[in-house]
Length: 55
Image (cartoon, rainbow, N blue to C red):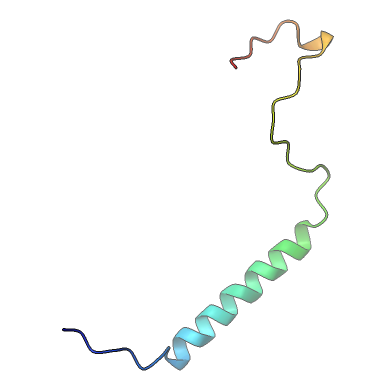
């Protein structure tokens, strides 16, 4: 049997906090994005006539 864990160490807490801060900073620097993510593939336009799309 394994022993139950007492909780995160101070080093683990600091590492997690640093990671969360870095993630938050990265999100703030990239927000707002120019365009929202498209969930579906849009229909081809006339200019796309030469492009073959798989569906």
